[in-house]
Amino acid sequence: MNGKHSKTIFCALFLCFLLVGCTRAAGKDRLAVGMPADAKSFDPQMTSDTVSSTYMIQMYEPLFDFSRDKKLIGCLAESWKKLDPLTYEITLRKGVTFHNGDELTAEDAVFTLRRMTTPKAAAVKAYGANIDPAGFKIIDRYTFQVKATSPMAAFLSYLNHSSSYIMNKNAVEAEGDNYGRHPVGTGPFKFSEMLKGDHVSFERFDDYWGLKPRFKSLIMRTIPEPASRVIELETGNVDLIYDIPNSDFRRLENEEKVRVYHNPGLALTYMGFNTQIPPFDNPKIRKAITLAIDREAALNVVYHGLGVVPTSVLLPIHNYFPELAAPEYDPDKARKLLEEAGVPNLSFTLYTNESKQRRNYAEIIQSMLADIGVTVQINVLEWGSFLEQLKNGNLPVFMIGWGSSVNPDPDAYIKTAMHSRFAGSTNRVCLKDKEVDELLEQGAVTEDGPERAKIYARLCERIDELNPWCCLAIADTLYGTNKDLKGADGFYHGTLNPLNSVFYE
Image (tube, rainbow, N blue to C red; front, side):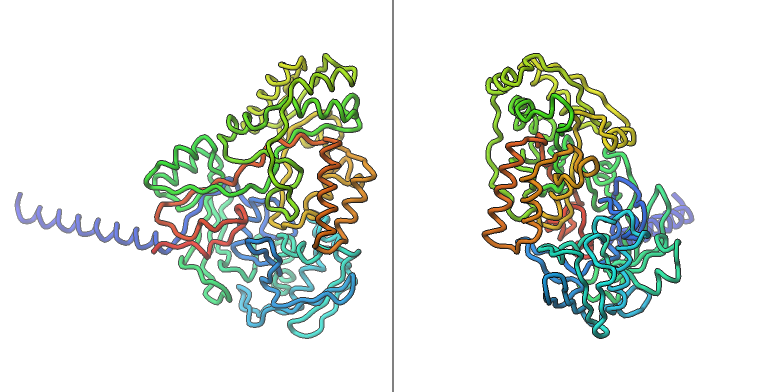
């Protein structure tokens, strides 16, 4: 090899070394996350879906948060007090800066909360309905009052929801209908750009009041296919992914390059019975079907044991969640109840959507019910059609999920699912029970303590007696990171975690 060629090769190798070094250095400056879908909007009051909220929590903050022991704590709110059954006074942190350089003031908070009560926020109207639109008063630059429409023990906890992420008044008014594409918050990262179907990028907000991110930038890549997200993590192209398939999780536990985590889930999968359609208006029939399903065995097959079988409609995240017990499984008792109900040869169609897990679970239900003489047909519907049929009350028996926010107060979760006022909408089983309604209403206004605990204990008992839901599974939240990424083990809010806590050493 002559000197000229040797010099050329040396230069090439040296350049390669520099490029690799730069790439690694850049990798330390940028956090890459694999996401299952795009955000629908970056306006917190235009959508409340979990995926969109996962993006938004990087750049917005609520007034309140929750501790690991499910207590209400301040985020942008520094202090607060209840003045009367309806009125609350909230004082903001001082020196908090928006991404556009404006200081956070009471005017921004009042603007945000009042906007929740307007037609503009129709997507989150259930949360805005708790707020009296005429019940605001600004006391000083950092203090304001807000009124509830009716007494609510959990009123302040509702102000953790994504719909109440605090926005900058000037930015919203300046952008108008385009605000969802130009968001401005107070969070640890500020919005940079979005390429639909590809990625959303953020920059570190150096004036953030809280724990500052160690990364200069954050890129959240849209990778809809779960298997592709796993591959991207294994190959090091992303640092973190959400929604790992159960079938991959166990394998990844033994991988050297990655670390996987599972935390209690925030959604319950259930089989619902339209309680107004015969023969499912008979509680005995609903109970018989539930007793005939070995839900522990099904959990191990469908979810690879990564979850729990619920013993009530509440989730482990909720206050007053009853202690877990082995779910009742008694095929003989199920047969007896069907005979008592006069339908020993019951036949029905179970409707579900295209989710692989739900289809698999439906087939297990089909097989188990066949053992007690019940014939089940499975009808898999496209998601839009499935929801439309549910809305119209056309599905006597169906399988779906019910998700919770990170709010641990049961009133924020169970009321809209079971109160007769919501029958035919979020109360998809059309339950109309006087005692359930009364217990829900009592729970909503009773302050935390022994009396409230008794109310929710009886509520869980009553719902178990009626059995409008066959509660199938609470799947764990599954996510994974590069093995060297630190700080991800504390994601106790599911995917709704700002990523300023993760870092490479």
